[in-house]
Image (cartoon, rainbow, N blue to C red):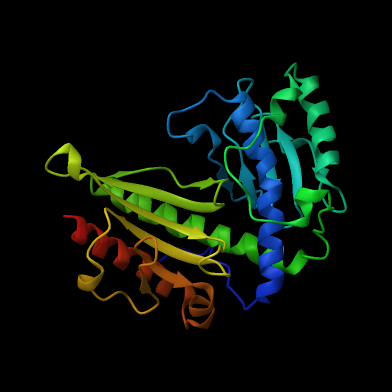
Length: 285
């Protein structure tokens, strides 16, 4: 099971949750911009990946060269600098009622105080974001989305518990599994299992993660993706909470409404993830 840290998931209005997800997705780009600008690039863009911090209930960048990190607390959309110790944030800025221009001004001042060129923040993003009024100068409304943002934080917190368990299980089996990270492009929290084949052309990948929602499902959902894509006509059965998604990618999926309705959310979601991972590995073996 995921452990005693699991927070019960309750039904949340989809429109409110979608709005909260979009605002948080835009807010987290300040972490991504900072990482791209000041952290040594990695071939897989791993320098832009974000870590879930349980004590913060939010996301945090990898360490900058001076050891500092930038975080985003999901529940109230507050940005904060941390000096590398566990003493708490050094400086913070709540995005509520503020546009991105004000966030840029605050962050620029923080970077200048650390002898970093703030203009590096202004480089164009390498990926598009979903459309939202924030991109046109609208302010963040964390207060208006408070309940939905709290629900979103619970989805991420629960996912980090379960996914960390899956990653540990894979490592115990001597399989390569990446750290559990959030990728700011799609805003998903995931670990990637690599399965070397008999030759280099047959390497298999199993992605295990939580999406907060997207164009495929307008609600949070867990996924276990399989690549190379197996024959859709020969896909085996899955644990009770899941079904196969085959449009544009192949993955076992368990959407929020099924998890909310489960009698034992923690145990049944964990069973879905671990059972689906076992199925995916078998498909690629």
